[in-house]
Image (cartoon, rainbow, N blue to C red; front, side, top):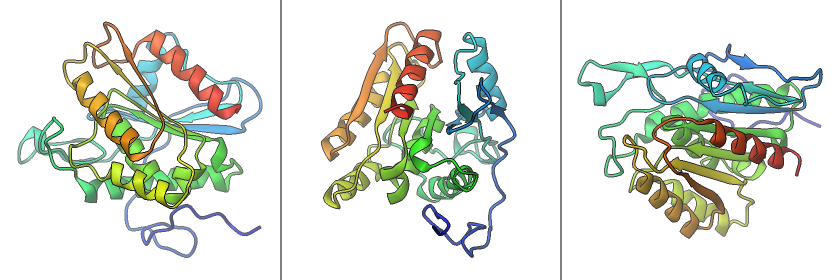
Length: 254
């Protein structure tokens, strides 16, 4: 069989294309507990964090995010201008935000650029022998929003991934994601299993914003596991992590 190319784009450095954006730092990895590696999770951090920061945060919640045959990759976003910090502010973010609420305009150029780089990480796993059907993409906060956009904006990812999860995140009121879901449904494509969970006491990203986003995606035709956690703020917690691990194992062992 020929080489599998996921959503080939001009800036990709394989399938005959050339890379115009420097790749993501993917040096932070949690290896499988066992000797075999037959699946991969790629988890994107929130704004201002890093892959290492997210990995260490998960470890502080009891080191529960470990899998027998699954590698976890924690990419780190590039430093870039971030409007919420003022005209000269920069931060490790996946895309820009003018407002931290659903009325803010979606930064489509930034999200598309980072989606391309995340796809490069996925492609590297596929090239290494991990089928797309054995890869789960997800993230926390801004990373969750970027994961949703990346998976749903690409036909092959949307139909081929084992699953996509988004924790404590939301979509812009004018997000293109629901319309992309409608296009997938109209074309008869599979939409990978999706999960979006939120803390009920989140004082940074309102739980209602997350719920409204889920309702729009569900109305467009997506099936999403929506759940809220009592007492959880804009954070990760061991009970949520345990249930997420079970959900991922269910997708990989389906």
